[in-house]
Length: 169
Image (cartoon, rainbow, N blue to C red; front, side):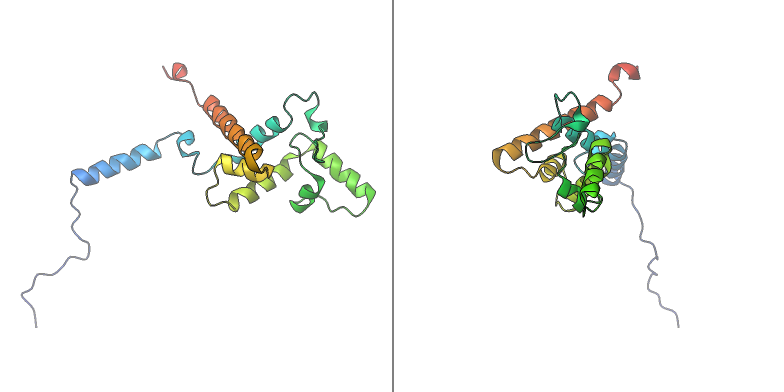
């Protein structure tokens, strides 16, 4: 038995009107934006690490051998206990402590990266400002000032890495 009712198509009719074209153009424009435009959504952690480590030992003649007031060591100013928590060598003897300290002096980047990744993963909005605050664990006005300076330096470094308009012509 057949019915005289019209059959509904399996795929609804797509009508491409002005609002749809506008949305598609907007989406294409967003996808074409440079990386800097997406920076608030997902910071570039290697760049953020370099900004933090440079800031931590600014003015030091030998940044890799820098010692902080609170027991931090190296170019990125990491405390030995933090290094162990974030993947450094376990310390049970004085010899192991010396090896850990040498690691922090010669190659602090892997531990710094682990801290930054942890911070980014545990923040609701992992902006450069928030990640810097987490890394520094600063409290009060000093912590806010530190995070604000890191965020500003990060933005400056990202902008400097973009091709200049003079080179585009």
